[in-house]
Length: 138
Image (cartoon, rainbow, N blue to C red):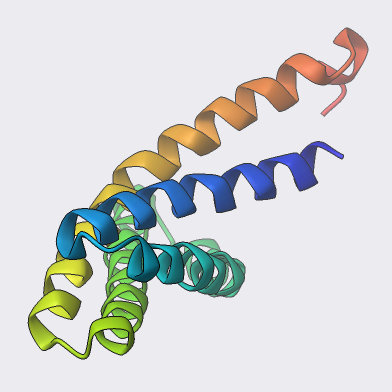
């Protein structure tokens, strides 16, 4: 149940960021609504595949330096994924390369900053929801 709530919260967070940026760029509730419906859903659907691919790479890291480099490359890759989706959605919505480019720069930066904070909050909520005996069993 908590996993479903976390996923819904991720979608809502993406939607809020997408709407705010799209509205700031276009001033149009219609284009902003399109971004809210399409862009976050695409990202939430793609991110588990992205994370699974990078988890395999992290597991192959031989030392702390390699793990750190792998994590840094994952974040760069995640930003690129978000940028591509943001550009595509805004370009399709407006037909403007410039608007697509601006969205591609701003939207992933906001998501890469906000979503780890979001996930930390949910991790704390998940730990708080566990009975005390289960905390030390792992």
